[in-house]
Length: 215
Image (cartoon, rainbow, N blue to C red; front, side):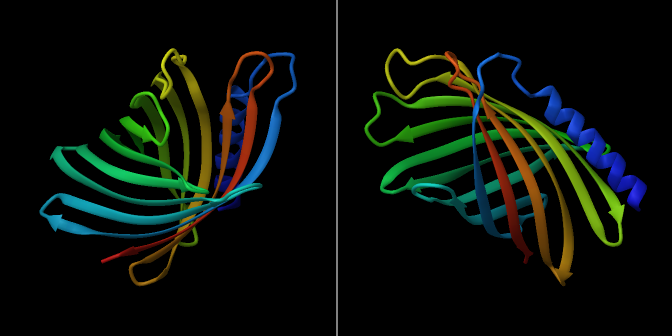
């Protein structure tokens, strides 16, 4: 088991290193803790739903999220889905519907998502594309491990004349274990890079805790 975990961690470290910016300017860094609870179930054959509540704790105002998602299998290893999230940060609100396709290939899954983002005090609806590759495997002793990399690309800014650009790079690693019938506990680490011009790039280190119940 220890060799598998070590190999898993080394592979993830290489992924994180590949996402590091190469510019000379030092990037700012901060720490956050994301805590999520969710309920999963089926609403029809081959069609599942997820309802979630999340708190993102950070320096300054915390962020609170409520969301729901539905996915349905349309072919072997292919699912279409969509959902809605509402984000609130100290009274500043974003409503975020999205659509996605997920393709499973062995222990890998590829997800492509488009988000329509409606903000308070914005000129227009923002658009963001998210492309994620994730690897999942059994790491022994009842634990399942995962690692992923994701590109978040801003297609349209919420302000007129705002830039189209890479919004974020994300690298994520974690492990999940069933702690009671239908109840899974997940712990993870998420590294986020927000590349910006003129030395304004920032890094965020996120600890993640998630409790998920399957109906």
